[in-house]
Image (cartoon, rainbow, N blue to C red; front, side, top):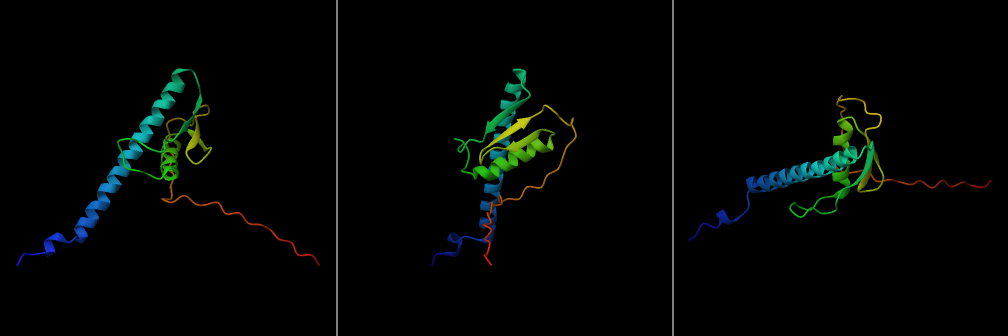
Length: 127
């Protein structure tokens, strides 16, 4: 009789899959940072002191990703490098080096999932 247990998934298989996804996400983040950096270099070569960059919703040679999470990760990278960064929409942000703080690194903790905005409606009771 043939040993069928070799065909089933093990814990190590699941861990390997998770590690491959994490490596792919790190590579995607690195590619996005390089793309944004090219945008900054282009703007700086045109004597500009700021730029707006939009995170692409899809990269042809990478896995699919959450645009908001990647936007926050790229923003935090440039914020840590001393740039002024402000989010404009879910996938675009403003980057400025007009009032640069120098080469000091700033550290930011980014939560994996972006918090959702909650709106509270105030109700008033009449007396």
